[in-house]
Amino acid sequence: MNIKNYYLNAYPTDELGEEINASATFDGLLKNITNPYSYIGVGDSIVRERLFDELSTIKGVPYSEIYNAWLAS
Image (cartoon, rainbow, N blue to C red):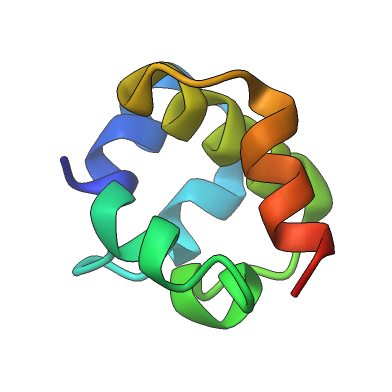
């Protein structure tokens, strides 16, 4: 699933959505969990948290599992 499309639909008033890398996907985000800001092209923690939350839903795992994988990097 394309992250930018998801984010613009889920958070239409957040202007940072326009800055998200247009080719970024949630599978790619998981593969780049060690450096999510670089991968998505936005250095905002609220955007990261929202994307981690959606990633946890897509993968069927608790948010803490995604967050802890990022912290461990």
